Length: 84
Image 1: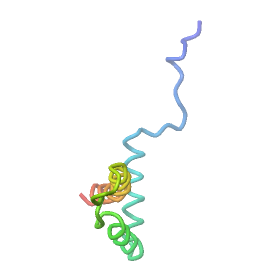
Image 2: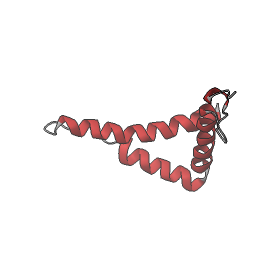
Image 3: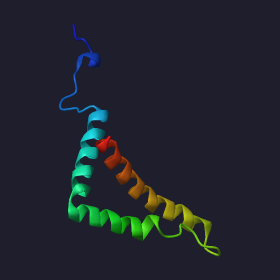
């Protein structure tokens, strides 16, 4: 008698938390180099340190800019998490 699908073990599955930690490590390594720090500084200057929206612009532009900013914040959060 077959045990059913419950008995099937997935192959080569890495727990989600482990994937997240691995990615954090890769990002931290990449941006810990002198060149990586320059790129991260440039990204901050180009995105985070510029206004997210200006009077007269469509509101959707602010949402779009916030999306750009969130990428830089995510990188910085991942780097910080590894350093702690």
